[in-house]
Amino acid sequence: MEAERKREAEISIGLPETETDVEDTADLAAQLHTTVTVGEHAFSHMEDDIDKQRLLGGQPSYTTADPETASMTNDLQHKQRYERLLRRAKNEDLREVSGMAVSTSALLYLISLLDPLVKGDYVIIYFHTITTTENHPSLSWIRHVYDMLEYKYKKNLKAFYIVHPTLWTKIMTWWFTTFMAPQIKHKVHSVPGVEYLYDVIDPDQLEIPAYITEHDMTINGLRYYRPVTSSSS
Image (cartoon, rainbow, N blue to C red):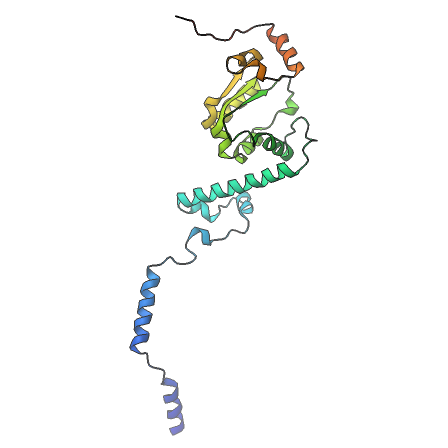
């Protein structure tokens, strides 16, 4: 019995807490309450496969964070995607891209041509002349290209002219600029003939293929448009 009482006494005996230990513990607890808890911030949640989550219908955790954090994250990811495409455009051989087929190669070819130009103001003229339905890009591909391009493409674009538009072109343009890209709606213009461009662009600056000018004369005739001139007072 004496031995059992001794063992019980040994088990119940512990090291007493000193005043210093208690104060340090309380002070540490107070500090922890005033600091950011690791794991609660949006950037601490690492996403192993964001694209997979999107395909499955889920949302990455950063999309549910505060708007400023989500915007910064989206901008950073967009810039990284564009820089990867730009590196590919500079390194890959794009000479075999003919007819601007709707593909990744066409996007890379577009970036390789425009990236040096969009650092300042620029104008694009798109000739839809004698374009067959097989060469019509889908609305989803146009949206994909628009989303891939950096902000400087939209900001520095002064005008986008579509020459010889068809009914399909007009409908697609209206739909896209109304619902998908309203920021550039006022910059997109459809013109029925080449000479309508002479109001805004010097003819000497235009190098137009012969088949386009021949088609233009066939449907519009010769000298069908006179540029607008201001009358002298």
